[in-house]
Image 1 (cartoon, helix red, strand yellow):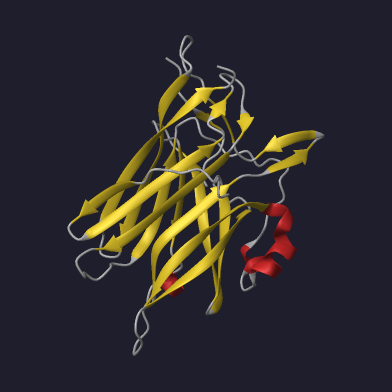
Image 2 (tube, rainbow, N blue to C red):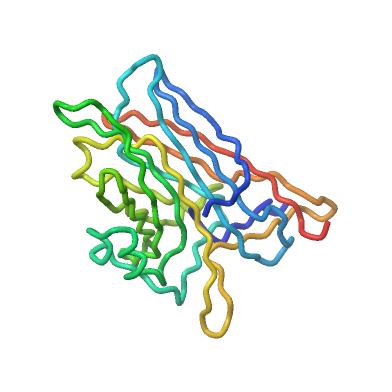
Length: 257
């Protein structure tokens, strides 16, 4: 039987469609993960442009102190790949430090998506407070065999920015494309990431042809008009070594059926 979904991208545009969150809990620590692909009606064999969204959050229950989230890893269906040939790249040094307006002006041709994050900030002598920031995803340069997605997170209140560098690697198994990031070391003493959302959706012209940063096909078996597939799984690593994992499945339909 063929794979239900052949993703030609890994990773993460607000798609405007609902996505059911999956929850996992250990003690008083709870993590959620959700994701979506749009459109869900796709060709059976050939690839078509799509948008992919992933989001997740962590919280401490019953008044417990939230441990610091250090790493986020999202793994996509094994046929996943990221197509960025001919797409401009952006360097970290060009967008840090920079406001989101400046980053867009400097590296606008390398933008591949957007999103949001929420941080719990803890500073000595002050009451904890939440900071919400906009996220812009840029196609980054290669780091050896790894592809990079540079996510600039910018907050207007208080003003400030930092970069999340997502490394994209290929692995064997059901989830063959892995995207992972680590919270910048300089934020380890005060920033507690509680929610993230990142979406990828980009088409561009290369070598006279229209290309898609993210594309997919719904290769349901002959005789079937839809299929359910393992879309993605997430792993959250916390200070102290605790790890929470959860996964989600989604359904695609064969276009024209």
